[in-house]
Amino acid sequence: MFAALLLVFREVLEAALIVTIVLAVTRGVPGRGRWVLAGVAAGVVGAITVALFADGIANAMEGMGQEVFNAGVLLLAVAMLAWHAIWMSQHGRELAAQMKAIGGAVANHTRPPSVLIAVVALAVLREGSEVVLFMYGLSAGGTSSGAQAIGSALGLVAGVAVGALLYFGLLRIPMRHFFTVTNWMVVFLAAGMAGQAANYLVQADYLPALKQKMWDTSWLLTNQSDVGNAMRALVGYDAQPTGIQVAFWIGTAVLIALGMKSLGRAKPAPASRGGVAPEGSPVAPT
Amino acid sequence: MRLFAFLAALAFAGAATADAEFTLTIRDHKFEPAELKVPAGQKIKLLVVNEDDSAEEFESHELNREKIVAPKGRITVIVGPLEPGRYPFFGEFHIETAQGALIAE
Image (cartoon, rainbow over all chains, first blue to last red; front, side):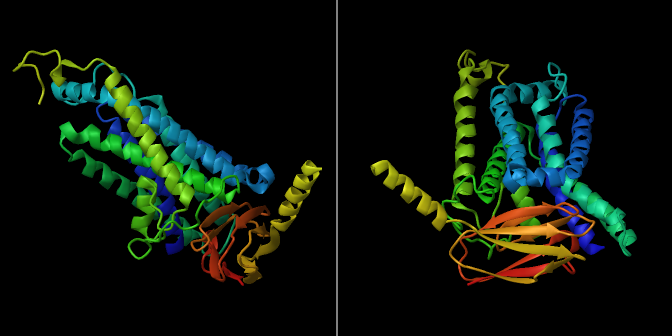
C-alpha cells in the first residue's frame, strides 16, 4: 500500500506542481478554473491513450520511441512556456495594474492563454500515463490490490494537497511582486524541462552527454527524496546532471530571459514607467 | 584512394564501438538474471523483456534511467560507458520483488 501511495504521490505531485504554477500565473483571469480543469481532463485522456500504446511507442524509433516521445512532449511544453513568459513580460505589468484597480479580476482578458492549458494537459499526460499503467496492473489482479488501490487514492489526494499548499503559499506574495515571481518560476520550469528533454535524447543516444556527471550534490539533496523530486519538477533539479542537461538548462533560461528583456521593452513604455507622464503624476501606480 | 581509406576507418570505428547487447527478463515481477555482468568502459544495450501481464518500470538511480515496459512488451535501454562497479536497478511498480544490479567490470 505504501509503495503504491508513494508512486502515485510522486507522479501526481509533479503534475500538480506544474498545474499550480499555471494557476498562479493565470491569477485573476475569469473562468480559468474551468479551463485548467479542461486541460487536466485532456491530459488524463492523453495519459490513457499513451498507456494503451505504450508498447508501440517503446518499439518505435528503433526501441527509443519512449525517450523521443518524452523529449518531444517536454520540448513542446518548453516552447509554450517560453512563449508565455515572453508574452507576460509585455503584458504582466498591465495585468497586475488592472487587477489592483478592479479588485482581482482582469477585464480585457476573457480566458487564460491556451498555451498554458496545453502545458497543463502535457504535464498530466506525461506523469499520468505511468499512473494509468500502474493502476491497470493493479486491476489486472493480485492479492493486495485493494490495499494498493487505497494507497493510490491517498497518493493522489496527497499530491494534489501539496500542490494546493504551494498555490496558497504563492498567493501570500504581495501583488506587486506576484507576476515577477511566478514568471521566473515559469522560466525555471521551462529550463528544467529542457534539461530533462536533453537527458532523454542522451538516453536515446541522439545527443552526447558531454559529461556523465557534471557534479554530484547527492550529499545535499538526492533525486530520490521527495523534496528532490519536487525540485526536479519545479526547476529541473538533478543531483548528478549530465553536461548537456546543464547546457540545455542554462541555454533555455538565458534565451527566455533575453526574449523577455528585449521583447518586453519593445512596446512603448507605459506612462507609469515615467517616460511620458509628467513628474509627480497622480496616476502613477506604486 | 584516400576516400576508401577514410570509409574503411569509419567502418572500423563503427565496428569498434558496436554496443554489447544483454537481455534482462522480468518474470513474476522479478528480474532474471538478478545480477548481470557487463563490460565496463563501453556502451551497453540492455534488452528488457517483460513476460508478465502487468506493466513494469525499469528504473535505476545509479544509471539515471527510468523506462516503462508494457505488459508482454520489451524495451531497449542504452547505458554507459560505465566505470567498474555495481549499479542497482529495480522495477518501480513491484519494488518489493523486482530488484537487480548490473556489475560492470
